[in-house]
Amino acid sequence: MEIKILEKYRKILEDTFSGFPRGYCYDSSKILEYFEGLKSVSGYFIPEGEYQNKSMWREHYWNEDKKSGLEFDITQDQFQGINNKIIINKIGRGGLKKDKTVEKIFEQNYPNLKGYTNNIIKEIEKILI
Image 1 (cartoon, rainbow, N blue to C red):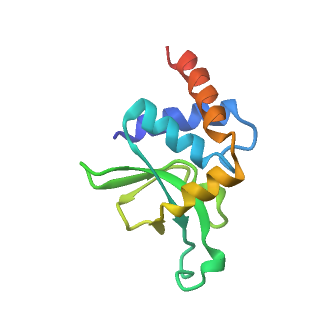
Image 2 (image 1 turned 90 degrees about the vertical axis):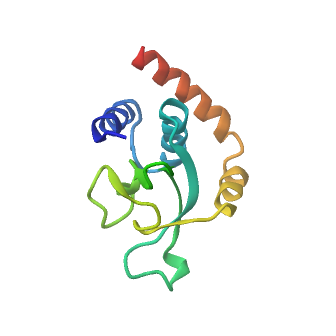
Image 3 (image 1 turned 45 degrees about the horizontal axis):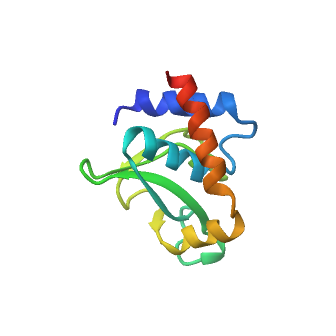
């Protein structure tokens, strides 16, 4: 995955949604999965030095490409202390911990999220065409 492609999606999302990236990790990961085939992954963002302090962990979504062994995050800068708009790391090396229970947390807290994301995908299709 070329960084230019990730930059393109990031720019579209920034231009489309007020307050992006805060609160858009689910949508962003699903958009990259839909358009680019990067697997959407749920789990936790763990601030540096806070691995033992689970109260500091934040539910989060990002993407992976097992073929290349890389993970991609275009919304991690919503967290304090993160300045890079696009983060690419080897899978498991970037302060992200996979946990499937996060998907259940999102579904409980945001029951209409999937429908909302499908509408976003339709809007982005119009932009990309």
